[in-house]
Amino acid sequence: MKDKEQLKNKLSKVQYEVTQNNGTEPAFRNEYWEHKQAGIYVDIVSGEPLFTSLDKYDSGCGWPSFTKPVSEEAVKEKADHSHFMNRIEVRSKEGDSHLGHVFTDGPAPTNLRYCINSAALRFIDKEDLEKEGYGKYLTLFDREK
Image (cartoon, rainbow, N blue to C red; front, side):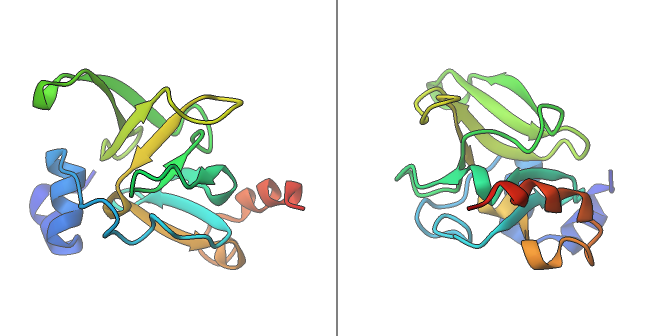
């Protein structure tokens, strides 16, 4: 993981606040909440693959929502009792970036809603996966209709 000064130079203020200080960007005013292109979403800090467009859905919450991570190993969860709430925080496994929270009000089959800050993500279009070094994820899109 990069040191804080390197991250401050690499990330926007919002990206830094979200990923390093457990911040939250505004609902309905963020880059990926209505994003519909096919591809994967990676940690803005570490580049580790986190979610795919195949598992993204419109939950109406104003942030990108996913039914599951790209793999069980992609994220880690921890109890979050901030702001007088009991929630489950979602962090990237390798980069330890704050991503958002997971809730149990999502659609079947998982009934999960990974509510993720756009500022914690970088999108890689399906067409660019190979050239960006994520070619092994192309097979996920074989199940597309």
